[in-house]
Image (cartoon, rainbow over all chains, first blue to last red):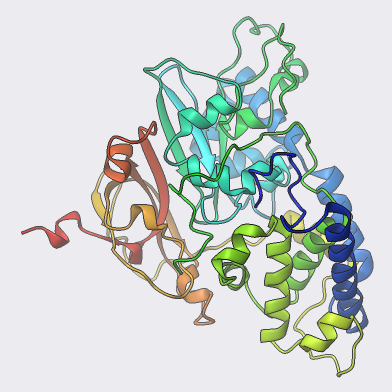
Length: 218
Length: 223
């Protein structure tokens, strides 16, 4: 938790000094892993591949490809809204924590925001592993009651007549927000559009970048 | 379980502090906890609902003062202990002093990619007709099981309407207890913000995925 930790340090126990808490957890986890390896329950090379996969191979660039394609291709967009699991799989993004996908379309009248109040459910194949704030108590507690305030904390405001719809991922259905295409990008290539799609815009806590935007949001 | 995991609508946790750090990990041990949790889940000694139940069963004060991967670490140890895969002494020392227990599977390096790519879909053939259809009004049951459930407290007893029917999915309340998958119809229910929170909300609506046993006709308690 510790999402309210003013120095942004999310892993240290509040009563510990940073260094000691880290090294203590390092040792405890190392002890557990060596035990599991010794007993033959886990393959150490499989662990390395798991770490590598979730660190470098899956991430929000996958989701950005999906969104950019939907912006360019109305037929693909309709498929995405009708059967997101299949439409996303057609780009090669499938598997764990993305088995049952739903895409939520933002419109001038409706803004969607996704949360998992009970844990940290998140569509791994298209967004990678969730950022720290997504798993933390401040976001999980507040998104369902004050999504407008949450969005403001991310630096975005929408007109008062925009309806905020929140989606709490309580089952194995995973949600991906289809943000509105930024104005002035009609002739853009899929690659150029994908560059504008931020991770947060696919969660609903942000908006896509605009071509002239200098905003460095994730 | 009315545990600390059920956070929706709680207040005073402070700012969200969105950071620009795209790495989900802050320290190497967090990477290892994540990998070990997935690899141990693949042994087949427990299921994802049991994993969630183990994490939720941490005392609320401990849950709320732990980082995310500390919670995973504690949950993993709990599952290893409760399934007899290791003793508490072994977990502490990291040295094996008892014989390894048999496990149904071990996830080998060569199989990782395929396993992740395949995932674990939870849709199942339905054993009965769905009780509700899109557009139907329903009420989330007032229920407080001390075991695992995925019905958040904030919507219990509240009325909403069905906006999607997803087919029958593994029922976590049963699966977490080792009672089998007992697939149930899964619906997305849209609750109006005012129904959940009165006037103290900026949400027009909140959608919650609810299995059929969580729902009843809206008139169930009307006079």
